[in-house]
Image 1 (cartoon, rainbow, N blue to C red):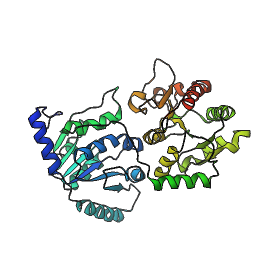
Image 2: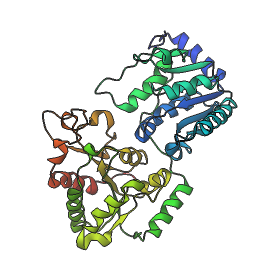
Image 3: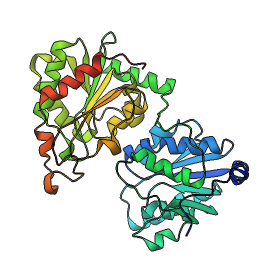
Image 4: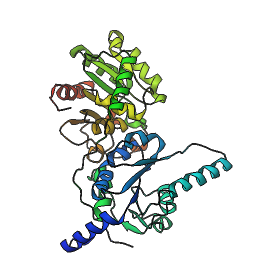
Amino acid sequence: MFPGNLPQCPDFALELSWKMKNSHKNILLIQLGDIGDVVLSIPAFRTIHENFPDANIIIAVREKAQELIKNLPGTHGVISINQGKRSFFSEIKYQWTFFSQVRRYQFDLVFDFRTGTRGAILAFLSGAKERVSFFDHDSFWRNRLFTMLYRMDYHLPQHVADYYLSLPQAYGLKVQDKMPEIHVTPVMKREAADILEREKIPSDLPIIAIQPFSLWHYKEWGINKYIQLIQRILSEYPVTIVLTGSHNEYERTQLIIDQCNDFSPYVRNLAGKTSLGELAAVFKSCRLLIGSDSAGMHIAAAVGTPTVIIFGPSSPASWAPRGEGHAIVQKNMPCVPCRRKGCDDTEVSRCIEELDVNEVFTIVRSQYERKYEH
């Protein structure tokens, strides 16, 4: 087993730096977590590129996340992991074709940023001689698939982005920037403009995006409160509000709009109408994002859009966007954050349910009226 920290001798560091920059030509970075995990891994991806500027860097992510990272500076390609259901023989054919294509890259170095089995298998079958990851206390056989492991256990109040950065740091790489950043290309900007025009969103009014829903219902504030918040915003500011989310959330999102009464014409439903790449570009066009603890906050922050995020049982210290452009709203209760799936794991969060509209609107007003470079 390898230690968690490399020697800090200056001569060793210089020798290591020279060898690393000249010995690795094809590098695979594996991040098979959720969208938020992918975005928060961007500083680690960037660090590896900066330390291996001449290497061909490929990033493996779940299929839904590929648009967010395919245009990252220093990235030369994306391996998309399709987790769709297939028949037994179709699955065999898919896996054979998939790993045959992976081997063609002739990787010599792999970083796996998770402790799951799928990433470990991909790292091993990539053929890379050097395979780096976190040590997993619960999986002896997984650990044996790597050549270098680091005991970098996550501990509060460490930010998740710093946790992912700890892997290349432990390997000996120098970190220059810890902020996640998604590059919005001119093509993405045009796609976003087309979407806004198609949805008849006025170009002469500021846009506030609201993402009310989450993969986890115990993180959601509630439809009626979002309706009240939207009415408060539109009664005070001349803006257009766009509601965002997944295709499965379209009907719930439309329910919010339908109950906004006289304010409904100033609210648009974009749920399910954008890819993740397009969503990033839409957020780039917005003055502010308001929402729950979900992937949307990471994407908006990574394109430079200020945010107001409603937190419940999860820890802002771990997940909240960093920087002065971002604010959180969280109920001041002795049990918060409990980091559980609602109160006593009931999927119901009292800290969310008791959060008043006035408390959220006060922060929204402050964020909206501040001046940011965006």
